[in-house]
Structures are given as C-alpha cells and as structure tokens.
Length: 323
Image (cartoon, rainbow, N blue to C red; front, side, top):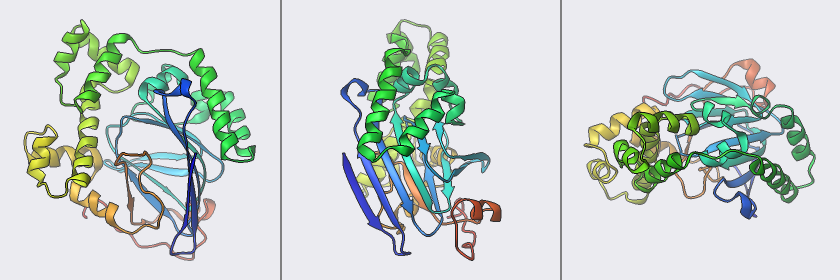
C-alpha cells in the first residue's frame, strides 16, 4: 500500500492511497485507489478514454458527469460504474470528495459484474443498479471501516467471491483483445477474425457483446493511449512523426481523431496538464496518461451549495474547446 498526501495553495488538503488486489484478482482488477479531498475550491477533470472500467464507491458528495465531446450531461452520482467509453468525460465537484475507486480490466469487469459490464459501454451507472442489494451493504461496510487497509481487504473479499461465481469471455474474444493490446490498436480486425477462426461478423458481434465496444473503437482507444504516451515521453517529436509512430495516416488524421474522442486538440489537452493544479497526482492510473485538470466553469447554484462549495462566488467560464 502506498500513501501520498499534500496541500494546495488555497489551504486545502488531499490524500491518495494506492492498494494492490490479492493475487487471485490480478489480471481482473488493476488496483484500488482511496481518496480524500478537501480542496477549498471546485475541481473539474477531463478523463480521456482508456481500456479500463472504473467502479467508484463514494462516501459523501456526488460527482457531476458530462460528455466532453457533446457536452451532454451524464448525471450526478456518488457511487458508480463507468463502462468503456470512446469519448472523454468531464467530472466536476465542489472540492470535497471521499471514497475509493476500483480499476478493472474489461475481462475482469465481465467476470465480477457479469454481462452487464458490457452493457455499460458509453455509460455511467449507479452502483445500486449494477450490483443490486449488495451495493448498499458494500458501501456501508467500506464507509464504516477503520482505515484503508481494512477497506482494501473488504474489497478483496467481495470481488474474490464474485470472481469464483463469475463469467469469462469466449477464448476467441480474449485472443482478439490480446491482439489489439499487443499492437496498440494497429492490427486489422480482419486479421484478428482470421486468427480466431471466426468470421469477421461473428467476431465483431461477440466482441461487442462481451467487451462492450466493437473492436474498431477499442483499437481507437488503444491508439489514443499510445499517442498520449508519445506526446509526453517524446516531446522532441513533431505531430507528424507521432502520427506515423502511432498508426495514423498523417497529422490531420491524428488531430481529427483526437478531437472526436477528447473534445479538444492535443495541444490544448497537454496545456491543461501543464497548468498548476496543486500537488496531487493528475492521472488516475499508474503509468497511464488519463487526465487533465480543467479551469472551473459555473455550475448551478443549487449544485454548488448542495455539494461542498462554500465560496461566495464562482470563477467565470473558461471554455475547453477554444483553448
């Protein structure tokens, strides 16, 4: 277990605690992240698409969720499950958050949540709607636990029991998923179908039914992740060089795809990552580029006063797409 703590310039404080699941859950659950924030100011985070599902158990205020590309609202949830998404999301809150996030592989989510995990693609769902009655008991036990060590042990026990009674992908779907990840989304789907022994149509249908998104969209997500890693790790490369490295036709193709998935240009996203936002780690997955902290935009007065914002004024609007 690894703990990080710090404070912000506004007098706020934060704590993050990383926990690893027990060995039987490896390959299904990537990790646990306990979090507590009292930032004294609102926070908006742009979360880009990844190949990971997130189950969040909250102990306090809800997170307001929006689609970063369409601008449409996805509601406000305290405890939730986020399926695979092709487009980025914006999460915003008043500055006070407390809970734990569980990062699941798609295969792991299918195993411990059942086929509903695939049905959650492009959606955020209330945890109660996914788990049913066990959700309330899980939230209560975690909220009442004496510390993060006990909370992570409770999660281990909960998910191990569900894994033992769970589902698994068809072997052909697992092979296709492994091929997409191994190639960072550049392998042709037709080749994956040929290697699986299935027709292209059957692979696409079964893959979507068990993973949630079609193979082509998963490939786009994996290429996006490789692209973000290249932008951060190889700043000496031009946009055209990164496009060639990551499997795009040219820089224009990269830019169009990036905007359609993230809602802004690569330069705008990297600019938001460079902006000071306190000392807390930006990314929600270790070793991945997942997040940028955005300038605050006005929320409704009822949302601010109900969910932790105590200030007398709200910072003025500063748009994402025009930056």
